[in-house]
Length: 250
Image: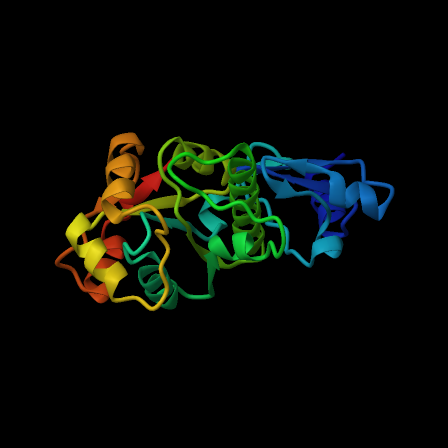
């Protein structure tokens, strides 16, 4: 089969696109039912053709070694994962960062927690098995949502409390690249002052000192760690956008 013929089959939706972080592979078999399309997944990305999901498949560049495999990372929008403890400024910084990006989305991970109306298990410093299971579900939903928005051509700022070993796992869940990790780490005194001045309270029986200590002791030093104690929101966003190589992870 010629290269032109293969390209035409992709355009017509006769192939299934399997999305990976840095390439797409096209198979000649199309799922037979809608259920098949919805159930098939690879590396965190939903599978299906452009008609099923309203997506525009990338076109192989001229001179590509294969008509079936090519790099698409240059065409992918970034995901910025913004994390830190409660009252570290995540929501404000994430919203301001998204506002500076063209065609962008702000995904708030905590929204998935609040979707649970009955039976919600809250996280503590000594969480129950159910609380951990609900946290994993929340992270999975947030990562998949971010991936889907990127597939649709949006830059994504994903904001949530992702600390300790959960940060490494979250990076693995987010399969699209480029991915930037931003860890907001203001002084605990600044966090305590912000918490005291907020209408909502998130710490419950914990204190900012409790969570900050666990956060700094257990979270791997990946991505861009920012002490934002003396930085304004605008300065923080300027620094993030000005140091992409510091925040980018593989």
